[in-house]
Amino acid sequence: MKKKNNSLINIIAALITFIVQMFISFWLSPFIISKLGEESYGFINLANNFVSYASLIAVAINSMASRYISLEYNSARFEEAKKYYSTVFWANCLLFVIIIICSSIIVQRLDCFINISPNLVAQVKITFMLSFVNMGVSLLGTVYTAAAFTTNKMHLNSLIQIIANVGKSFLLLSLFTFLPAKIYYFSIALLTAGLITLIGNYIVSSRLLVGFKAQKKYFELKKNCYTCKIRRLGFDFKC
Image 1 (tube, rainbow, N blue to C red):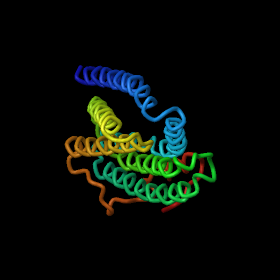
Image 2 (image 1 turned 90 degrees about the horizontal axis):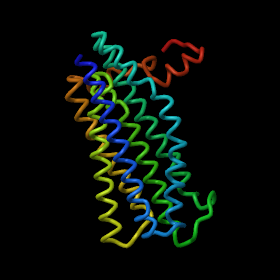
Image 3 (image 1 turned 90 degrees about the vertical axis):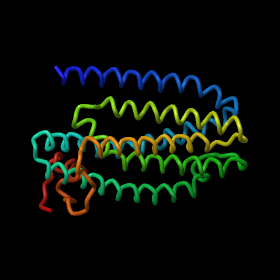
């Protein structure tokens, strides 16, 4: 009965999160467009779409992380769960560094790839760079979302998302109301929301998975979800 109640709470929380996100999107978008203009706002969507496509790679190779951690944890194989937990975190740290290096090169030459008005070049580059950093922050926090999934308390993740979205909206309203309009305000707000989510999920993880920390001694290449993806395609190797 408790598991059914938890599942129902998780579903309701996820639905509330979706409603809040939709409300904020429809409410804020006209306000931001009125401040920036359609041309400038278009670069925000372009940056978000560009980063979203890049994020698909990270999502694909991290999609099994929570599953492996949950399977080992709920089977009382805590040492194995810690190995997956730590390995996923450190592998994502490496991917984060790669993302920052590649994105820095792309952003530096951004005006060679897309047509940008001279007066907007600096703002657009900052927008793209912050968007990539936000993607990296989300990647680092992937392992912390496993705690709620493992203990069937996904509503905690939803609550954190609601808080992050409200914080993002408040910051956007403040920036566009009290300061001259800039394109990168939106990316600043998204990055802030990402940091709130990261910190919130870290706190939840430390409370639900007591004793779980990203320790280098637990790092094993064969536990890495990137390696697991390769092995599922039919390739196997000894680490």
